[in-house]
Length: 350
Image 1 (cartoon, rainbow, N blue to C red):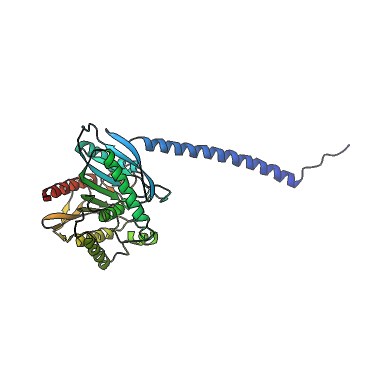
Image 2 (image 1 turned 90 degrees about the vertical axis):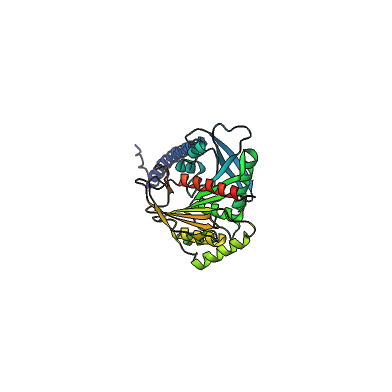
């Protein structure tokens, strides 16, 4: 009687390989389904408007940098023929327009004060972290993104009831740096600008230099003055819009030295001189040191340095990233600053 041959080592290994391959395939398919579900849920969440009354209107703008999506918040009950101010809000790295709206709660204020809010959104193909490429001046990407963002603003002005004489722009981190850059390149289009935890224009021309600039390097006082003089010369027949700088002295991502650099650039360009600093604090909120720079009696620059604040929107929603409810309310401060700039400009017009 013939004896059965025992399975060879190669046969045993082959069967084990097949079993492992099947297990890996099942795990990969399950992981793929889970990832697809997460992507779908994220997409559905992004389509949902932030909480509150009003309309969350989607759009796409085309420009030299390609296509950029945006959302426009429109407060409820806009009457026929009514013209509303426009606030442009540029998010920071790692955020979306919807995230920024939720963090800042700008829409809630817009519903009460009656203004439009535009939230452009960076394409992750243009920057994997979702940062605006404010620093890519050598490659030309920064200028292309500025032009594309201006295309989005122009499109909104064409489609919606925007008061062109009351337009402000604000941003956080990379969004703040881009907001300041846009205001310097298009000073007649914006009537107020706010930079929260950003870097001064001219501080970097590449991604490598941007890292050093964020840490407070690459912008010595001499360079800041030179950039300011160049900006002032370029805008000699116009004027830069008033600027509000907000920054936390506990910011470990973008050094507070950048607030000083940005203030130096703007003050030099506008010829504004600083007044006496004052400390403000409401209740248990973090204290802030506020300095106003004036020229001919008008505020051209306000610097607000917030004690203990990290890299976060001051007074923002605590459940959101890059948002700290302990600080003074940056959203209200920015809108109040913009309103004063609108009034000052209206009084100055012939």
